[in-house]
Length: 60
Image (tube, rainbow, N blue to C red; front, side, top):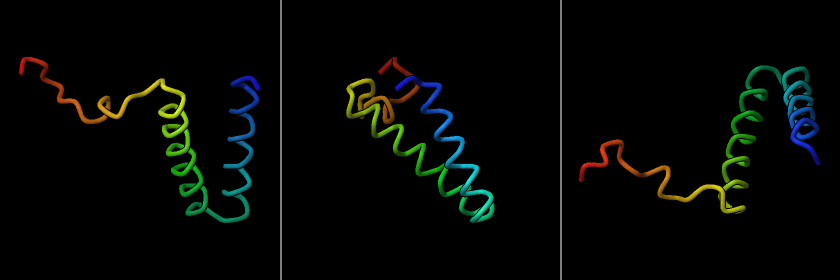
């Protein structure tokens, strides 16, 4: 499935959540979608757990 189709499906899900559930449901669906995206990238091997916990200063 192409990224455009995945984006369209995600947009439709957010639209339905916003229309039927209001703004709170929209925010909840968007947040859970972001968490799912990060978990999916982690499981595919594109992200490492250390990417989130490294310090900005690399002089250590």
